[in-house]
Amino acid sequence: MAELDKALRERAEERFGARAYEDYRLMLGEVDAVLVLTPDDTHADLACEILRAGVPVFVEKPLDITLERCDAILRAARESGTRLHVGHNMRHMPVVRLMREIIQRGDVGRVRTVWVRHFAGHGGDFSFKDRHAEREHAGGLLLQKAAHDLDVVHWPAGGYTTRVQAFAYTRATTRQPCPDHVFPAGFVQQRPSASAPSPRLGTHPHPRSRCQVHRRVR
Image (tube, rainbow, N blue to C red):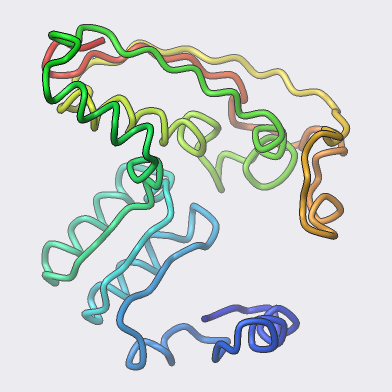
Protein backbone atom coordinates (compact mmCIF):
# COMPACT_ATOMS: atom_id res chain seq x y z
CA MET A 1 0.00 0.00 0.00
CA ALA A 2 0.99 3.63 -0.38
CA GLU A 3 0.27 6.23 2.29
CA LEU A 4 1.77 9.65 3.01
CA ASP A 5 1.18 9.41 6.76
CA LYS A 6 4.07 7.55 8.39
CA ALA A 7 1.98 6.46 11.38
CA LEU A 8 -0.64 4.91 9.10
CA ARG A 9 2.04 3.14 7.08
CA GLU A 10 3.44 1.61 10.22
CA ARG A 11 -0.02 0.60 11.41
CA ALA A 12 -0.78 -1.09 8.07
CA GLU A 13 2.48 -3.01 8.12
CA GLU A 14 1.82 -4.18 11.67
CA ARG A 15 -1.85 -5.05 11.21
CA PHE A 16 -1.87 -6.52 7.70
CA GLY A 17 1.72 -7.47 7.09
CA ALA A 18 1.65 -5.25 4.02
CA ARG A 19 4.67 -3.51 2.63
CA ALA A 20 3.92 0.21 2.81
CA TYR A 21 5.39 2.92 0.60
CA GLU A 22 5.42 6.68 0.95
CA ASP A 23 5.57 7.08 -2.86
CA TYR A 24 3.08 4.91 -4.79
CA ARG A 25 5.33 4.95 -7.86
CA LEU A 26 7.82 2.71 -6.08
CA MET A 27 5.34 -0.15 -5.81
CA LEU A 28 4.01 -0.19 -9.39
CA GLY A 29 6.52 -2.78 -10.53
CA GLU A 30 5.57 -5.14 -7.69
CA VAL A 31 1.76 -5.28 -7.86
CA ASP A 32 -0.84 -6.81 -10.18
CA ALA A 33 -3.34 -3.96 -9.75
CA VAL A 34 -3.88 -0.77 -7.76
CA LEU A 35 -6.93 0.40 -5.82
CA VAL A 36 -7.21 4.19 -5.83
CA LEU A 37 -8.99 5.03 -2.56
CA THR A 38 -7.86 8.62 -2.18
CA PRO A 39 -9.90 11.87 -1.99
CA ASP A 40 -12.16 12.32 -5.02
CA ASP A 41 -10.29 15.26 -6.54
CA THR A 42 -7.02 13.28 -6.66
CA HIS A 43 -8.30 10.29 -8.62
CA ALA A 44 -7.48 11.46 -12.15
CA ASP A 45 -3.84 12.35 -11.52
CA LEU A 46 -3.14 9.04 -9.80
CA ALA A 47 -5.21 6.79 -12.06
CA CYS A 48 -3.85 8.22 -15.30
CA GLU A 49 -0.24 7.74 -14.26
CA ILE A 50 -0.85 4.20 -13.04
CA LEU A 51 -2.82 3.21 -16.14
CA ARG A 52 -0.08 4.54 -18.40
CA ALA A 53 2.38 2.42 -16.43
CA GLY A 54 0.35 -0.60 -17.56
CA VAL A 55 -1.05 -1.48 -14.14
CA PRO A 56 -4.82 -2.23 -13.92
CA VAL A 57 -6.71 0.24 -11.74
CA PHE A 58 -9.78 0.04 -9.52
CA VAL A 59 -10.98 3.61 -8.86
CA GLU A 60 -13.37 4.21 -6.00
CA LYS A 61 -16.45 6.09 -7.14
CA PRO A 62 -16.78 8.79 -8.25
CA LEU A 63 -14.13 8.70 -10.97
CA ASP A 64 -13.28 12.32 -10.14
CA ILE A 65 -15.19 15.56 -9.61
CA THR A 66 -15.29 17.05 -13.14
CA LEU A 67 -16.19 15.66 -16.54
CA GLU A 68 -12.80 16.72 -17.88
CA ARG A 69 -10.92 14.76 -15.26
CA CYS A 70 -13.17 11.73 -15.70
CA ASP A 71 -12.61 11.85 -19.46
CA ALA A 72 -8.86 11.99 -18.85
CA ILE A 73 -9.04 8.70 -16.91
CA LEU A 74 -11.10 7.01 -19.62
CA ARG A 75 -8.72 8.29 -22.29
CA ALA A 76 -5.67 7.01 -20.39
CA ALA A 77 -7.27 3.57 -20.05
CA ARG A 78 -8.20 3.45 -23.74
CA GLU A 79 -4.86 4.69 -25.04
CA SER A 80 -2.82 2.43 -22.74
CA GLY A 81 -5.06 -0.61 -23.20
CA THR A 82 -5.01 -1.10 -19.41
CA ARG A 83 -7.99 -2.45 -17.51
CA LEU A 84 -10.03 0.10 -15.52
CA HIS A 85 -12.81 -0.66 -13.04
CA VAL A 86 -15.02 1.86 -11.22
CA GLY A 87 -16.07 1.00 -7.67
CA HIS A 88 -19.81 0.60 -8.15
CA ASN A 89 -19.93 -2.10 -5.49
CA MET A 90 -23.74 -2.19 -5.34
CA ARG A 91 -23.71 -4.15 -8.63
CA HIS A 92 -22.40 -7.07 -6.60
CA MET A 93 -25.15 -6.98 -3.97
CA PRO A 94 -27.44 -10.03 -4.25
CA VAL A 95 -30.61 -7.92 -4.15
CA VAL A 96 -29.43 -5.71 -7.04
CA ARG A 97 -28.27 -8.68 -9.12
CA LEU A 98 -31.60 -10.43 -8.53
CA MET A 99 -33.49 -7.26 -9.49
CA ARG A 100 -31.57 -7.09 -12.76
CA GLU A 101 -32.22 -10.77 -13.51
CA ILE A 102 -35.97 -10.31 -12.91
CA ILE A 103 -36.05 -7.31 -15.25
CA GLN A 104 -34.01 -9.07 -17.94
CA ARG A 105 -36.28 -12.13 -17.84
CA GLY A 106 -39.27 -9.90 -18.41
CA ASP A 107 -41.02 -11.05 -15.23
CA VAL A 108 -42.39 -7.55 -14.59
CA GLY A 109 -42.97 -6.56 -18.19
CA ARG A 110 -41.47 -3.45 -19.68
CA VAL A 111 -39.87 -1.24 -17.04
CA ARG A 112 -41.06 2.34 -17.39
CA THR A 113 -40.05 3.88 -14.06
CA VAL A 114 -37.26 3.32 -11.53
CA TRP A 115 -37.59 5.22 -8.23
CA VAL A 116 -34.71 5.53 -5.79
CA ARG A 117 -34.43 7.34 -2.50
CA HIS A 118 -31.11 7.20 -0.70
CA PHE A 119 -31.27 7.51 3.08
CA ALA A 120 -27.65 8.52 3.57
CA GLY A 121 -28.03 8.87 7.34
CA HIS A 122 -24.83 9.06 9.34
CA GLY A 123 -22.64 8.87 6.23
CA GLY A 124 -24.46 11.79 4.66
CA ASP A 125 -23.79 13.87 7.75
CA PHE A 126 -20.07 13.73 7.03
CA SER A 127 -20.60 15.13 3.56
CA PHE A 128 -21.06 18.72 4.61
CA LYS A 129 -18.81 18.73 7.68
CA ASP A 130 -15.40 18.01 6.12
CA ARG A 131 -13.67 18.40 2.74
CA HIS A 132 -16.71 16.89 1.00
CA ALA A 133 -18.48 20.19 1.63
CA GLU A 134 -15.97 22.15 -0.44
CA ARG A 135 -16.66 22.40 -4.16
CA GLU A 136 -12.98 22.32 -5.09
CA HIS A 137 -12.63 18.92 -3.42
CA ALA A 138 -15.94 17.15 -4.04
CA GLY A 139 -19.09 17.14 -6.13
CA GLY A 140 -21.68 16.98 -3.37
CA LEU A 141 -23.95 14.15 -2.29
CA LEU A 142 -25.39 13.61 -5.77
CA LEU A 143 -21.94 12.61 -7.00
CA GLN A 144 -20.45 11.19 -3.81
CA LYS A 145 -23.35 9.08 -2.56
CA ALA A 146 -25.96 8.96 -5.32
CA ALA A 147 -23.40 7.60 -7.75
CA HIS A 148 -24.57 4.25 -6.36
CA ASP A 149 -28.21 5.06 -7.01
CA LEU A 150 -27.63 6.24 -10.56
CA ASP A 151 -25.71 3.08 -11.36
CA VAL A 152 -28.46 0.91 -9.86
CA VAL A 153 -30.92 2.71 -12.15
CA HIS A 154 -28.77 2.37 -15.25
CA TRP A 155 -27.55 -1.20 -14.86
CA PRO A 156 -30.89 -2.99 -14.35
CA ALA A 157 -32.64 -0.71 -16.85
CA GLY A 158 -30.04 -1.51 -19.50
CA GLY A 159 -29.36 2.07 -20.52
CA TYR A 160 -27.86 5.40 -19.58
CA THR A 161 -29.37 8.79 -18.86
CA THR A 162 -29.91 11.10 -21.83
CA ARG A 163 -31.95 13.88 -20.17
CA VAL A 164 -31.86 15.24 -16.61
CA GLN A 165 -33.99 17.55 -14.51
CA ALA A 166 -32.49 18.41 -11.14
CA PHE A 167 -32.49 20.83 -8.25
CA ALA A 168 -30.85 21.07 -4.85
CA TYR A 169 -30.84 23.23 -1.77
CA THR A 170 -28.24 23.88 0.88
CA ARG A 171 -29.21 23.24 4.47
CA ALA A 172 -26.87 21.82 7.04
CA THR A 173 -27.26 21.39 10.77
CA THR A 174 -25.15 20.26 13.69
CA ARG A 175 -26.05 16.72 14.65
CA GLN A 176 -24.65 14.29 17.20
CA PRO A 177 -23.64 10.77 16.05
CA CYS A 178 -26.51 8.31 15.95
CA PRO A 179 -26.31 6.06 19.07
CA ASP A 180 -27.66 3.07 17.12
CA HIS A 181 -24.60 2.92 14.87
CA VAL A 182 -21.69 0.72 15.85
CA PHE A 183 -18.26 1.91 14.72
CA PRO A 184 -14.71 0.68 15.30
CA ALA A 185 -13.02 2.21 18.31
CA GLY A 186 -12.00 5.79 17.59
CA PHE A 187 -13.97 6.05 14.36
CA VAL A 188 -16.47 8.69 15.48
CA GLN A 189 -13.75 10.80 17.06
CA GLN A 190 -11.93 10.91 13.74
CA ARG A 191 -15.03 12.18 11.93
CA PRO A 192 -16.49 15.70 12.19
CA SER A 193 -20.09 14.49 12.45
CA ALA A 194 -20.78 16.32 15.71
CA SER A 195 -19.25 19.58 14.54
CA ALA A 196 -20.87 22.51 12.79
CA PRO A 197 -21.20 22.57 8.98
CA SER A 198 -18.08 23.57 7.10
CA PRO A 199 -17.77 27.36 6.82
CA ARG A 200 -16.79 26.76 3.19
CA LEU A 201 -19.97 24.86 2.36
CA GLY A 202 -20.11 24.94 -1.43
CA THR A 203 -21.94 21.73 -2.29
CA HIS A 204 -25.62 20.89 -1.93
CA PRO A 205 -26.49 18.32 0.76
CA HIS A 206 -30.06 17.85 -0.54
CA PRO A 207 -30.14 17.11 -4.28
CA ARG A 208 -33.10 15.79 -6.30
CA SER A 209 -32.95 14.60 -9.89
CA ARG A 210 -35.21 13.07 -12.53
CA CYS A 211 -33.47 11.20 -15.32
CA GLN A 212 -34.66 9.78 -18.62
CA VAL A 213 -32.77 6.72 -19.80
CA HIS A 214 -32.41 6.19 -23.54
CA ARG A 215 -34.92 3.32 -23.38
CA ARG A 216 -37.64 5.70 -22.14
CA VAL A 217 -37.22 4.57 -18.56
CA ARG A 218 -37.69 7.38 -16.03
